[in-house]
Amino acid sequence: MMAQQRRAANLGMPLAGPNPATVAAVYKPGPAAQKAMMRPRHWWLLALFILTVVVPTAGYGWYLFTAAADQYESDAGFSSRTETSPSAFDFLGMIAGGSSSSSSDMDIVFQFIRSQELMMRVDATLNLRAIFSKPVQDPLMRFDPAGSNEDLLTYWQSMVVPNFDRSSGLMTLTVWAFDPKDAQNIATQVLAQSTAMINELSKTAQADTTRYSKESLAKSENRMATAQQALTNFRVANGILDPAQQVSGTAQVVNTLVQQLASAQIDLDMLSGTVPASDPRLGQLNRRIGVIQGRMAAEQAKVGGLSDPGAPNYAQLVTDYQNLMMEQDFAQKAYLTALAAYDQAVSQAQHQTRYLATYLQPTLAQTSTAPQRVLRTLLAALVGLLTWSIGAMIYYALRDRR
Image (cartoon, rainbow, N blue to C red):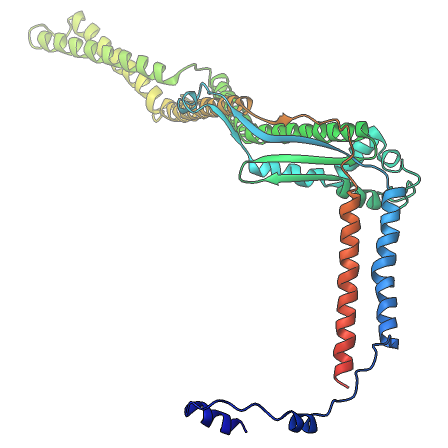
């Protein structure tokens, strides 16, 4: 029939409509759809919806709006600074003095705020168990006073939250409590204890800076004292203040004797052959020459110590004395160097100070900021709805596989 209609349209002939009698004879209506009815699986899904969405949301909302205690927030902000002043021992320090931030110190402060040590310090001052267990009608949010220190630490970390921004080096502290004054007091104590901890770090750094230079200075002092004592013992044992000066004096005496010996020898040569041998002047000159030679030998023996074993060996004494003087000079220079290094270390330690710069003092809240009742109720409903939807999808997926 459709082919005949298309052929008529191509020839421009009018289309002939279907015969109503024929259509009525061909069409037969099917059976009517059954009325929708609640089946057992639908009732189970409805019961599951009530158990996972309606009941938990209603119960949690009733708790939030009737029993949950208000929580008040106190905020504080601070940063660690290192103040560097010009040092008299450092010329560059006179130009580059100033202050800088220290992110490593703030990392330490961040962990310190979350630590049990800080919690125990604040607890000893404010009695955290009494503060966090105030709302008796709120069994979920309050802290059980009979809890252990570990339980208190877990609760502390949920109520005292630090937030450190590494890009700016600033830390913000948020503290919640059931009383606005308690929240402010806790924030104040955290700030004070963190400042004390930074001061301890600064003192430790100063002690470490000067400790090594102080030890080196003590060793130099002992070495210089030992060298001075050895030189004193040498002078006392030999009865000589300065052997070098005494050798110099002995050399001058020998030189004088040499001149006198030469003069006496010349006089003897001039008289020899011109006067008889019995002339008393010849005897005097010979005696003078002998005395001068004997004195020269004695003075030279003092220096060398070779002719007379009992004479002091001045050459050895001078050598020992020079060694002692060299050791003393070296010890004295080492002591002066160590003293200058120690003074510089002390000066640098005194001119570098760490401290916490507070840009936001702990605030005192006027209205509560937690718990957010409407938001928490909606979140509970959303979680219940997602749980119910996942359960329903799993059920129908398993049903369709059978």
